[in-house]
Length: 117
Length: 114
Image (cartoon, rainbow over all chains, first blue to last red; front, side, top):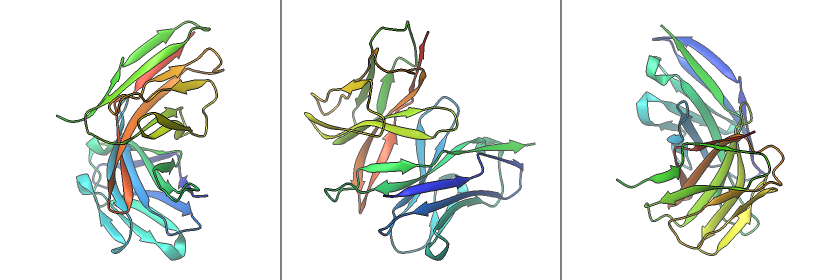
């Protein structure tokens, strides 16, 4: 079974500072990994995903994530935080069923990002 | 604009009543999902449906029921058997892009049962 662990339920940064949100995964097969963002009282929006190929993945709003197989990690970064980045961020991994399809995602518990002026 | 609609945004019910949450999508996606979100617990899968007239239980299906009579619609009923129904409910649909399925989410329904 696949799983993800997000280290830190709450991260606080100053505006203009580096954002680093941590995600580690567990998977017995090559993982497909995702980062989603959720603004208060809204649904989730896909930021970026990793399937195969280039390990540094660029997403929307200036975010990027690097897949590191040796560390089983997929951390999300942004060089300079903006007030509008304040939200909850979820890491997810594709979950494969016994039929060989990967319709489902397994989500981490989320990291709430606060940006201080 | 294509998207996923969930209604209503806020829903209040008395304990012991069944309640149905609506989810409609016009993205022409085959697969649809229902998640429950509680503070600090992330998203937990309730039910999902890969095609019309077929659906599977997720991780926390007890006390919930669904139907999938149309491709566009995937309503969720929270029954009186659900012990702790107060939560934020998210509907999603997905499309295959390359090797993966990308899920797109609706705005959610916040259910409060007292």
